[in-house]
Amino acid sequence: MDDHLTMFSRNVTKTREEITSIEDMINTYPWAREINLEEGHNFEDSTRNDKIIPSIKFATRKDAEEITKIFKEVYQNTYPYKQIESVSEIQNMISNPNYYWIIFTLKPDIIAGCIGIRLDFENKIGNFFGFAFRKKYQHIADISTASIACVVAPMQKFKNQIFLWFAEIRSGFSSIQYIAKLTGLSPVGFLPNKDIFFNQPESEILFVTYCQKILNDYRCYQKPQLISPAIFCYFHAFQKYNLGLPVIQNDSNLESELDQKKIKLNRKIILRRIEKDKFGTELITISMKGTNNYLQFFHYKNIHIVEKVDYKVSTLEDLYVFLEEIKSIILEFKLRYMEVFLSAYDSTHQTLFYNAGFKPTGYIPAFKYNKDNNLYEDQVLFVYHEKNLNKNIHLIRETEEFLKTIKYLKEIRKK
Image (cartoon, rainbow, N blue to C red; front, side):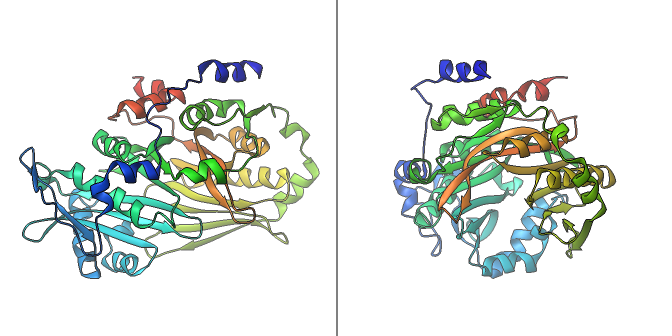
């Protein structure tokens, strides 16, 4: 345990590379913060390097059909989240104040690309998703300038309402990772083989950026309580965000200390409920009869993954039995991937997930808003994934260094 803490102290440097914030990015691109996306923006300097800078604006309901066509065309009808190919679903998003779509337009009125924005005003968190640009226009369009504007302009518009932004970015496109880096987003989590594009598995990288006051004033003051396998993920965040030292816990004997009688009783009262939407996505709830305990998640049957896990338990024995059910579901549904964000302050839960086959693949400071104390809590990303990772990846230096730090780069590179 002491060796881990010694490693931290020895490797900390004051030359933290390009530490940025939402405020930094707004100040770095003053031209982008003046953009009004409701009215739309045409770039005065319309060409750079003989390429056209697309115009950008918030989409309206009439643009929904073209957005779905973009995804069908770019991904050749293989996009894994089928609601994005539904005109009515896109229209519903555009009408919803928690969603925006931005479209890239080339003259005269060709919609060449798009990007989605999801806003959680209650938790003050924003999410960029669904970036797509038609291939036939990529050689004539300066996508980078317009993409930077599409990130920075919303940061400016919602700077008093959204304090943290994140995006899951494909590992197969270093150009998009580079744009994320330019706009202050940094890699903090690895999502191995999460998605399937063009019928092939592909890993994604979780990027985040914060406003200054979250990390300075509103981050939970508790010391993280981590199991040893999570230390490398913490080390990356430790260096990037100048975090304090954690407490390393050894809970190797935890399962032997559990109440076996309670575990046997819990097994008898386990329940499972499945609700399916029109796209085949399943909301699965595991519960225990007569209690308030539950574990809930979304199952995407078409690509065999699980995400958005939420759970509540009263005891470790409850969680242990839920994880037994999860292991059965992984086999039953032939899951390739399952992710869960765990509290950074509870090493016992981390231990049980780790023993159930989940690996730590990221440490995300201040990622969960606690309404009770008005503070943001750190989370540790744990993932179950199929062993063979797609080796066809293209990384920028910062992403490569991140994967090296969390001990995944060798696994990706090995033949």
